[in-house]
Image (cartoon, rainbow, N blue to C red):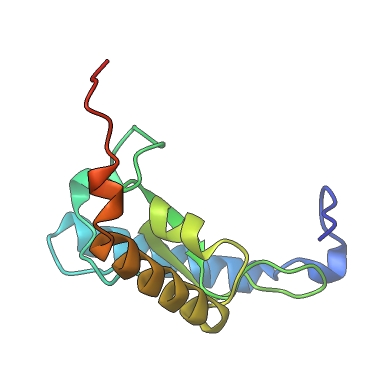
Length: 131
């Protein structure tokens, strides 16, 4: 993919769309603050106020705005219902893929991780010298 800096005017969301996104995110933030359940759109785990207010932005459980349909040149993806709060790790795993594109990738990863977990040779070959 080739990326460019900035967007064309016809790719920008309208003020009304941005306002709707802002209201949705604000309401979700209030729900998180009040202890109501708001889940990450990728892993469905409840977002806590501690995660939401974390100043450690490199923490995988810190919270970011996530686009369920990723940003794509030539399309407007910043609209109500598409932008949600989610975990940093989940957002990074999704990357620039749609949720539909993400499913087979995660299934492949899970299949491989189960094989690796069941592989005894990796434990047998573990070095005995500790640094």
